[in-house]
Length: 126
Image (cartoon, rainbow, N blue to C red; front, side, top):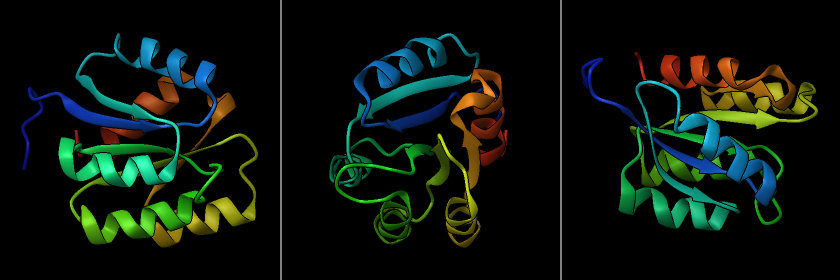
């Protein structure tokens, strides 16, 4: 178990480059969070996870190659200790069900960066 003084190591998975870069910019300013990677698709997330060993993966639910549910299922196999936080622009029944099945939090993209930071900290147990 990590202690609260150790930053949460975060991998961000978001296909929209402007949104991804904006989140990296904002999350780098959040106390206790260290961005260890930012990628644009599910396949890159799966490749990166084993190499960089994040505590939390913030995962856009709608990606061009794999949806968030598929990536989360693979992460449970290849990186079982990583926590997942889904991001969704249109959080409907499908996204909430997928998040629940994956044991993940779900944050709407319009909720604001503080809601995302809180979800990341909670997922990491901090």
